[in-house]
Image 1 (tube, rainbow, N blue to C red):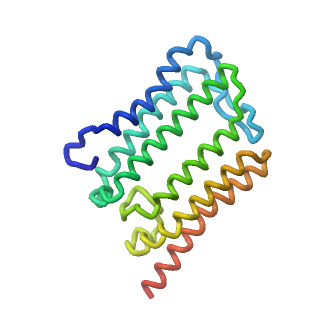
Image 2 (image 1 turned 90 degrees about the vertical axis):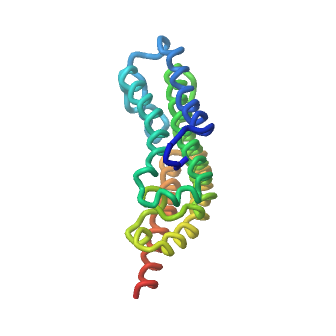
Image 3 (image 1 turned 45 degrees about the vertical axis):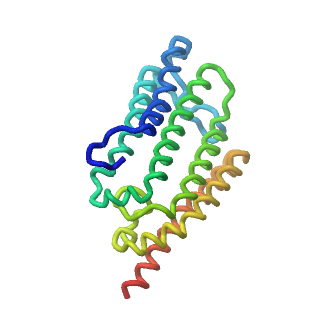
Amino acid sequence: MFRNDHRWCGIDWVVMAVAILPLLITWMVYPQLPPKMAVHFGISGQPDGYQPKSTFLISQALLLLAIPLLIKYLPVLDPKRENYNKFRRFYEIFRLTITTFLAVMFGLVLAFNLGYHIHMQMAVLLMVGLIWMVIGNFLGQIRFNYFFGIRTPWTLADEEVWRRTHRLAAPLWVVAGVLMLVAAFLPGWLAVGVLVVGIGLTAVIPGVYSLVVYRRRHR
């Protein structure tokens, strides 16, 4: 993946197929979509934001195609690009997972606007929870780099701090993912509260831990 020729391999075609599939479906159902599509949903799961269908579909198509390509080629700019080969399998899984998430969410919005009953809050929390769990299972494998992972001033300044922080964070991401799955079945603001706790676990604790470890190592 990070060879100098940057040739495409099987996983690249799989990722792009996942990205293109909802666009093909959109082309088939485009005449059936309302002129203004519901594109944003409130805590209750009901739409509270709309866009002309052409604007929404063009922006989402660009997003679906650009994100997987950006993730593929971002390591080229990283001075530590060789380290990506040490966690290549997870990086590819991450790219496929994010692309699948975008494709599924795009498909759910299409389905909602075609008249299907979709509980968007539940769908988003379930998807995000699964993503958090996937990332947590591989987080400890991420080697030092400047783009991907838990990047605090202290992890970027010391590779040992990076290693310890990612090992601590890995189970926290899994726990947070489980909390999000639970939150998917809770009502309104209670679900939001559980979501905030889950995000806090994965953001605040590793950040503080990286500072503590760095200071201990550089007294």
